[in-house]
Each structure stands twice: as structure tokens, then as C-alpha cells.
Amino acid sequence: MSTLTGVVMKSKYEEYTNEQRLEDLRSTTNILSSVGNYDSNDYMHGIANGLILALAIMENKYGDDVGFLSRPAAGDVNLDGVKLKVREMIERNK
Image (cartoon, rainbow, N blue to C red; front, side, top):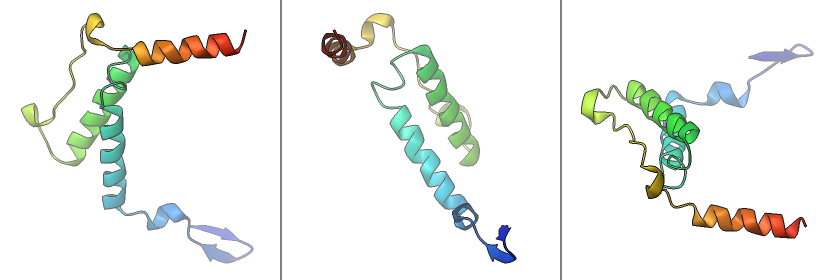
């Protein structure tokens, strides 16, 4: 709660329920765990598994129920779309 010139004001985060926070964590975890995100590099793989761990803690999941993502072999990652966009950006900036 903050005050400005003696008036008590609530921030939007004070009305943000734990269920809303959990739903946002689920949504973010789903996005970052999707193909093309988690498997694009080691950093994103780690971020996705970290979010999966945070969600598992919040939902009291343990062991095999957690569902960590395995790192795919280098040849299994399809980056053709990314390479194409990079090529387009290079050509555009010549």
C-alpha cells in the first residue's frame, strides 16, 4: 500500500490473488516449454526447467510428476525458420 499526499492507494499488485499468480506461472511455463523455445539453446532449456520446478513446488508435485524437459540432441533442433529470419535481417541491412 502506498500513500500520495495522505491518500491511501492500492497498487494493482495488492489485488493480484495467489491463484492469478499461479495461473500466470502456468501460462509462462507452457510458453517457454514449447518446441522452439526450450530446445533453442541451453539457456532457454534451463529457464524452462526452472519454471517447471517452480510450478511443481507451488502445486506440490514430486518425482516423476514434475516433468522436466530433456535436452534434445543438436541434430534434433529445427532452426530453419530462425536461420531464414536472420538471413532476411542481414540482407535488409546491407
